[in-house]
Amino acid sequence: MKHNLSPLIALQKLDLRCMEINTQRRKIPERLQVVETPLREAQQLLQQTSAGMEALVKERRSHEKDLEAHEAHTEKMKSRLSELKSNKEYQAHLFEIEVSNKKKGDFEEKILLCMEKIEQLQQTAKEAQAKVNVVENVFAQEKLVLDELEKKLAAELADLESQQQTYSADVDKGLFVRYNSIKAARKDQALAEIKERTCSGCQLQLPPQLISEVKRGEDLLTCPYCRRMLYWGGQTPVETGSVPELDKTSVLEIGESL
Image 1 (cartoon, rainbow, N blue to C red):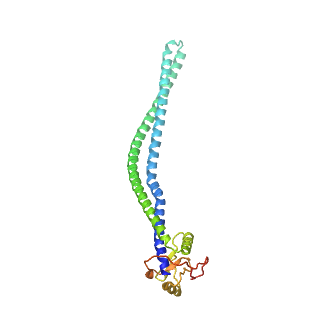
Image 2: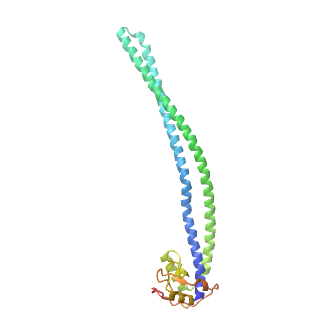
Image 3: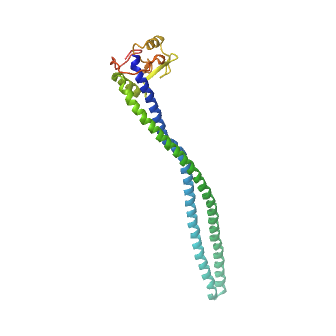
């Protein structure tokens, strides 16, 4: 019985490492997203600032056109002064010109305000561009590290999967089926070593009689709590080899052998 577990224990070590690798690989896009977030934010700020400047430039040009048209209208009004015959008309026209001159100041004020805002946004854009350059370098470096990690993990996983096939061939078929069933149900390990009178799978204390029986290794027993297959690590042999078919049961009672 002890010999039966040796290749299975070795296989589980490979399986657990494969699980770790797959977990690491799944987290790589998340890690990349973390370092990419500041870059996206910096780029968005730069884009918004640039869009704001473009809008202000258009607004300034619009005010400049309005001012130009207004000045042309004012000049036209001034040229009509000589055509007026009565003093009343003359004074009324002068008042209109005065109002027009005041309105000209409104246009000029709007243009200056746009120019001030554009200048502020130009400084903001300059700072935003500098930040983009910094976070782009950080992102590029981190992406390079994560790409290398992905290649390394993929290579290790391929090697482990090759070893899995080798060890799987040495495991009793019935035992292998049971192992895969428990592994799928538990989402982790199917075998659990007894450590300090507890099951290393669920960390619960085991009955002394069950521990003694596992130590003897006459039967393959399971944990009464998590249903993992128990083994005594101190007495586990290192050799592997073909073993006779086990008498298997689909449902195990507490401490029942497979």
